[in-house]
Length: 234
Image (cartoon, rainbow, N blue to C red; front, top):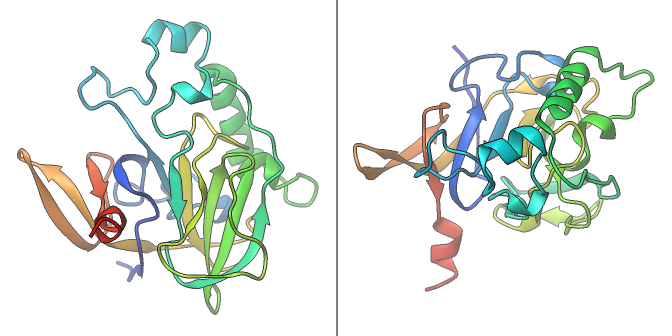
């Protein structure tokens, strides 16, 4: 058993985590690139069969791919999960204009299992990303961000809940999503993952929303976090 580091949920609204340490460890099938305890977050249509993450039809998705703006989460705001200092902020890596299931999955598998930090560009995996130093040897990485969306720069101090970027599809991404992890180094290529839990969020259970504290969502949970919106509409 491990004691996770507690951070704030980095998104607002409803989300689903298909890859989470609440279901399996390593959550992404590998310990490379600091991903042992990493999360992926997407938005889905809970009323459609299969809970798709896009507005298009399944045949279009399989045969032709889907433009990024057809994904529910693309462009959604990302927030700082903790107080800290920005130590890396990369924002010039282009996103592919549309998804392609087979090529994206092949690319994801290749990078997850064969990435060589000695010769490969970490942006081929991370795309556009922000790394925040939270404490000594604790870094938060927010990855695959939308090109041109990053709101912070290296050396900047951020507070928990600050708007820092938008969900994108850059780098090693099977579809627009936020990849989030804590790690022991600011260098993704050599970092070890660190376990983390979220200080508060809700899950939809038995027809109602249930508050969760210092918890780790599973891949069966419908997640919601609205506190930021509530605070700013008072």
